[in-house]
Length: 434
Ligand SMILES: [Zn+2]
Image (tube, rainbow, N blue to C red; front, side, top):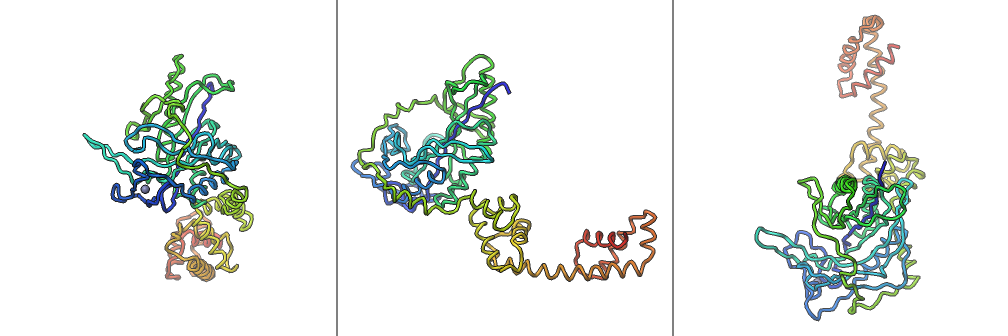
């Protein structure tokens, strides 16, 4: 390759706390009537004072811990000042230079990707643009939002996708967010730049950020589109503009939105209405201790403890509920069947875990084991009888008339008078004819 691709990511995840980040309004706003989950605090009325949601702070720290971050004992909130109609206060409460979590990493397929920081902020309201007007819904305003920022460690869209899937899995495992992208609970922003100098150790002098993408597939497409677009500009001897772009699904392209602001345009300053947060080491340790088993550990344990293949273990541990269901079934089975057979049944039969109880699943497996045994013996007898009653079959078969097998299968089915796997019957006949 004659160029170098540099990609970093910012991901926003909405936490599923009961109340919003700084007020008592319900954070469960999806599908609710506009502007019904509001109060003076999240509407940004003058004089209203924010009170941080402790659950949200703790969950933010746990996300950081799950991503191997360092958790400083001192942290604070800052005001990010900018005007936008969905931000009634004229500023967003966020974290600037002293976030909750710093310097972590995530490991995927033997590669290590750096996490720069994980910080806490509040979501904004939602704008809906009509033909000649715009509507504002403040239900989302003030919902706890965690931002996870990576180092520019990615060089291709495939690794980015794998990282995003892993991140989604981790926050779901932690139980802090459903990270449903269709509901806007997880929003993705890759930043991409390309350099024609393959050996250069420095970053290019520009980067292009693609804002608010709501699917892993679109991120992949947007990145690949940007690499091509930027390469074309670079090859003309020009430098792509430092800008923010959006992904346009219909055009299958990124489109320019605005030239990028520098960080100091936001005039960050410490939030005067919220005292700095000071954790004790004991608090941090106990948050870490209460983190449940995470995907990588569970995957390794399933392979070891239940002798499952990596493939099966990976499918079973994709979602916590699925993994729990499997373990419950293993317990119920009391060694009457193997974990391997339980895993196969769940995966191959695409079991709906909301419809079949683990105990029912085990019953099904035991029952099918029994009928299978019965069928095999019955089948063997039937095949033998057919071959004995019709010696012509064997003679024709030896002469290379394979169509005679079809006749034999029909005869066996006739004797059994029940549904049997045709391939099983065919194999059994061929076995006997050997
Ligand atoms: Zn409120």
